[in-house]
Amino acid sequence: METTKQIEIPLSKSNIKTMLLGCIVFVGLGIWFVTYPPKSSIPLYGNPIVIFVAGLASILFFGFVGYSLLRKLSDKNPGLIVSSDGIYHKCQWL
Image (tube, rainbow, N blue to C red; front, side, top):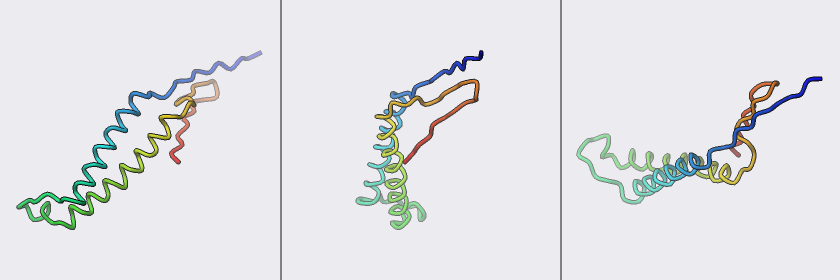
């Protein structure tokens, strides 16, 4: 008779909180770029359209990642399961 022993490794809540803090910083920078674009004498970096697009991309991308991290923060499921059947990583973003 074979018993299947399985090892469950939980998600690191402190790492998720650190990544969430980084997302909040980048969303804040994106909002700053969209509302009050910084002035620069370099033609590419001083272009208001480039600054606006970069700010908008930062808000959208890091906002989505932050939302996903908030959902993962309240998740009680293990992050990684190692068993005789193999390695199982539950990655559910939405």
